[in-house]
Image (cartoon, one colour):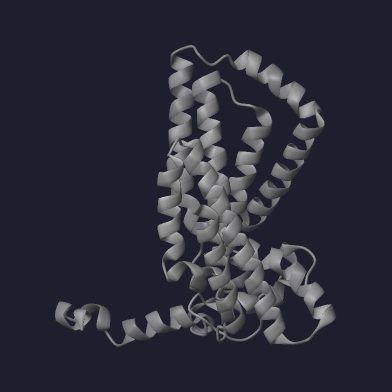
Length: 304
């Protein structure tokens, strides 16, 4: 049943990816333009704000950038083979179909590790796979594809971290580092993950505090295990990847906080009101405010 549902989903999503008219609902034009900008540079911090109206909003301060940067690499390879924009769009859409399919397999693993029965797991996931919105999301060029998969990765690792704390009263260093890396990557894919990180972080810190008070957490032994793990090959790889993710996180979110006093600054704080009018959502909201709709429109008119 599970394989049939996943296969049917992939067929639908691939069909939509191949025939869907650009640009579809999930801001494909924005994501393609962002990928094209990152394809001009080697490192993400080298990207610059395109001149003129801010059609990509405050581009250099956008924390939700990692999908665009990562997808810029297959885009560069595709550009060497063909200059067809249609081919570029379809191929990136197919990448997204694969990402979402992997995300569903990871969510299945998470539910099974949470001891949900196979029947319950497959029924829940099957219903989601059959929703019309799901293949439409997967078949589009959007950072939500990577965000979906990274949410599954992060939640799975966080659960394993909490389960390890409860069962063995210790925190393996590689698991902790990979969990931290997953959190940082997910946050740089889409900043909307911040509330989830806050909630999960508070839970894990509460669990550590409870074990500490109950004298079930031996910090000295755990530290010795960490030192040994850090010297192993697996530990060094995990540490290196975590440090790279940390540097990228600090470069974007840290610089935002230092320069603008916010992890996610508003477009006018970075570029000013006039340039930001070129960003469609900001321009729309500014026009609504200028016309006084926020204060004059009635509840009946909103419903209409």
